[in-house]
Length: 457
Ligand SMILES: *Cc1c(COP(=O)(O)O)cnc(C)c1O
Image (cartoon, rainbow, N blue to C red):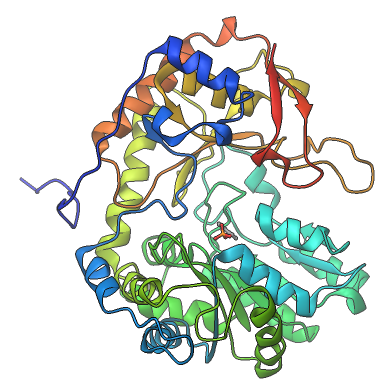
């Protein structure tokens, strides 16, 4: 008999978590204005709000913390991190930042000006925020198929090459660069194929435009290329990463994702001029160029994490857990973005709660119901997160309305996945009784989901 699949690690340290009662949760959520970002962590039993900075570091990463070099300038920790980034991505110039959005802020301060257009597949919320706050436009050129949650495609995060070329023709002189987000978080953690990256790269060359990779989950993307794309089955993850980055001119990175650290990020590029410009902004916003908002110890852990998480076994353990949760949801016919994403399951909320009108935010309603049911905290990636249109100030309902269940790396067991699936089933079973959702009482002008105050109807 073939041995079943199991994790490629064992557990050395644990952190207790606590259950609560429904009555407690009702009060806590009311006090939090039905916004789960406003809850205290100890009010949460299983926390799936994000996989960002919430993973468990390995014993090697913890060991590396002890030999962090905290020198202000020229720390050995910076050079260890730089060496790992050079080797894994092929990018020569490396500028650390305290997290991914800081990398965006530093680079976009140099490159994005009012009236610019920045096409790509779906832009992540902070990326869109950093573009729109500069009065530029983020143009989503993701393939149309990504919108149909029930369609199974191996690379549902791809850029639609025709859509991209149309933007390139219409706004030829207003495009400083284009972005490919790997994996495509907003479309459901869906990967981008190597072929698609190659095609974008060719188009970029034709129009003489640089390509930026928003790389938070590049290693997960490489895993999907290895297991799904013809010709890559025998390549190592590190070989695949080198080829992927050969189709880009620069990357911004949230190291809180695929480098499995609690805090950190960077810009890496082969364009010397971009690096020179970014250094100036980096020093103002983040810190000197060999730490950029990071501790020496964190840079050490980042270097080790990048190496570990560009190994097949580690990625396989992670992504198989997400797939395991999906298989449990399938048993209960719960609708989600198919196939399962790399870092999360994205529940198709309007399908799951068909009675809740879109003006009452079905995915946020589902987020609330799941927390009340079992103390599980997901995150709305839908109509609220989409913010208002900067011109018309209307809600943007032309996006998918998802409840995202982000799975932290190396943190929960499959028993936790079973609890999540059953809690969702219980909500699904009550779907015909859930007829009203939530309305907004107060919101910020941009990135409103973090601080929005809601009322439950
Ligand atoms: C998380 C993330 C960012 C922003 O990074 P932070 O570290 O949270 O600032 C940017 N792009 C993508 C795709 C992300 O997932």
